[in-house]
Image (cartoon, rainbow, N blue to C red; front, side, top):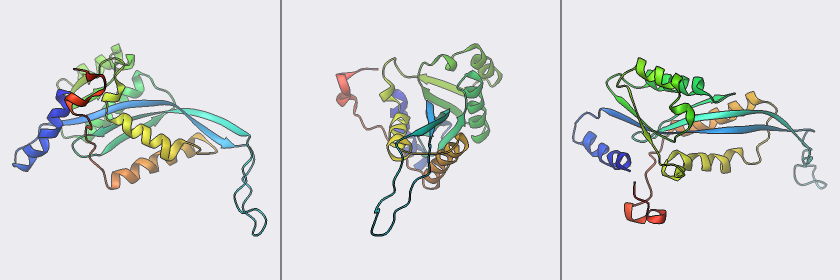
Length: 205
């Protein structure tokens, strides 16, 4: 919770003309996204006969994909990558992308869960190769709701993924990329919605 309080204060620091020396990213993974396609083509509406599109109930399951994404809590920018697998190698690749994105003078604070790949030997080896560049802030166990990016994933499921039909994994990647690219054109700064005294179950962190 200290990290979210820090996020609230940093815009005021910038407003006063002082440099902000950190980037704070809310990060998580969304694995198992299924590229589901129609088995048969949709039947288009026919005037005075069939007013709506007709779709067969049978469908084809194509490959599954994993989304790795992070929201910059100070700018609203979303970093994302879609992979076929979700291992330490993919997580490290994502960290390298953020390392290239942010100026070297900034420490990159990453809010994330306790998934094994986040603390694996491979991940630790990479972090040691870029000392002082990253700081991980781990959510408590069974408290994923503390991570703001979960709200984005929930919205994406409702507005994009639910009911979507695509013919291939490449089409799914294109749709996801377009979704986030559209958001990044006019990024919105996500804010922590709970007050310390109002959190569910009065959890103290």
